[in-house]
Image (cartoon, rainbow, N blue to C red; front, side, top):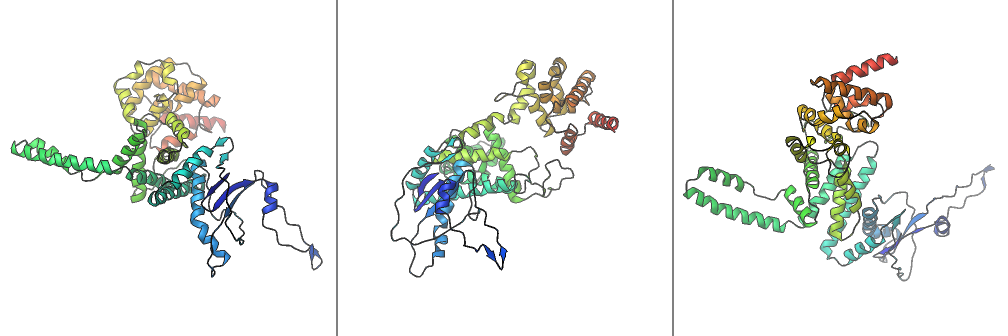
Length: 462
């Protein structure tokens, strides 16, 4: 790094450069009371150090220590800029050393605008961001700084939850809040549209009453009961403004608004009688164990990037959309129209963008979004016609575990064979295939043949 913000210069130095500017260690004697004292170990960092030089004016009655409070607001903004662009958390009191001194004049900083992380280069986006902040009104600057703070707090909570999931709920709240605050910036025309619609509905109501059209009156009264713009409407409108609107993105928004409401307003049924690894230290308010925070994180990141005119988080968002399952509406159409009979086995098994695969169907079956009969009907042909191989087992195993109890005997027999081959050759995503039953039990789905298979396998291994 090497850039400036207000009266601060933010830059990185090598170990050699750091040794020249670091705070001197306290001089200690070589021995004390005839006891040799160990030499203090030199601090070393393989990749160097981050240095922030900040300058501030003091009143005659201030002490040097007052400087920490004077520069803290700017420091938090600096941490926010770095955290937003790089996705790396920076905080005060993060093992930072500090020293103060007096100068007669403020120095002039060079405008290098350099920011890199490994092979990733953020210098162009940094320059755009600093220009955007400098050219914004005070009100917009405060909004930007507030959004950065929510982003940095969410990253911090994620980092603290990396292995335990302790603060995932709070991180999700922070990311959704970013979307909520951004959407408020664009809601004026939505509010106007709602007012215009209500006025038109009132005129339609008068006309319907005059004509004694009772059914129409009921429909209009129902429509008039909508008195405000919902959070979903606002975020959907934001997606339209940023050219981000599609079915997958809307499905993500709907999911996380529900998560947000569950977290913010609390739920009575947070107790879970079964858990799977990794174990969490608190009951989660989000019941879907497969939910990915990255979905709402990258959406918040790309929306904030669009608002600021930068390009960060675009690639992450595009990749996430490629790996996001098709929305349930598309799955139901796929089953209703029997599209599984019109595509080749190769297409069905290929994991490409916007594809529906057996894994997609088994995922929605486990989430109780589609029925057992839907899973049978859509996968019977490909399971019975496909040879058993590593790639096939990796894609079909969860479905095969569920369908091993099918009343369609040939289908059940083939699924049982798939499970046996996957188990013998380690052709599955689980660290141990027995973990699969925990996953099914967590979703309150019984798999009787698979349970018997695991018991028999355990008995033979004793």
